[in-house]
Image 1 (cartoon, rainbow, N blue to C red):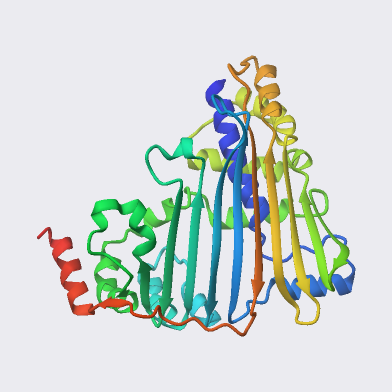
Image 2: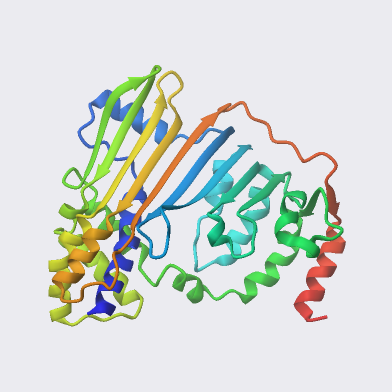
Length: 367
């Protein structure tokens, strides 16, 4: 039973993520025609450039041996420009032809410029001798990828000796030269297995079957500072009764080599509503009606540990200690939409392509 319970919870997390985020077409719910047009236009439009800032917090409450809530935070800042929709289309993941994606990648790398700054913070007691804050600064301009070694010094320690400032490599050029060799070593069957063995068409069809007004709500609430605000929620408890959702879970288990007996399937179906009833998901999207663009977004996913404990007790396997409560919350804000330029870091040292290729070929040959 414990194996079944753990496997059930693992699969639920995967399916919840799919249902909450994998929506091919914008969902309008009960929005008016005008609001639906505004929401659809904004959420399907990709500005050619923008700057952004975001935060992601994962908080665990009632964790064993913890003095209080434990939070891991990721602060994100950056910008991008030159987003090329045609190049992105060329990167479609056709696992039967890996060379097509590799061939399209250099053009994408050269057309898209971006910078990304990440700062990961976590409690000191979790650091285990490592810094409790880690910063990573990356940049991509004209196909050359850059990294700031100065911000990595606290993490790399003595191994960072001699590595200072910004360093860069010609990623686009390297892909052009190494691509044909790498493509010959890729197994399309193995690439398909990376998706968990699930038929993408099956997942798409099932998600479409459960993505309707019965389980997902979308409403426009009071505007804020002239911006339109849309909020969405998912009723997972009701979703658990949908045969299509159960089929998705069964297919996921089978793809992982897990087979359930008819008795186990019945028990899982009985546990599902109670288990999913302890999970909540809500998101918000802020849109500028003047430009039909998304300017901010947020989401929060919570898992109630007491609900999991109750389900385990009902199944005859009470937990030894209380299951922690988990919350995942994120927020992102955009600025300088269609007015952002990304430039290469000043003073960066770029490794010549021929030198880089020599190092790569030596590593691949074992020299």
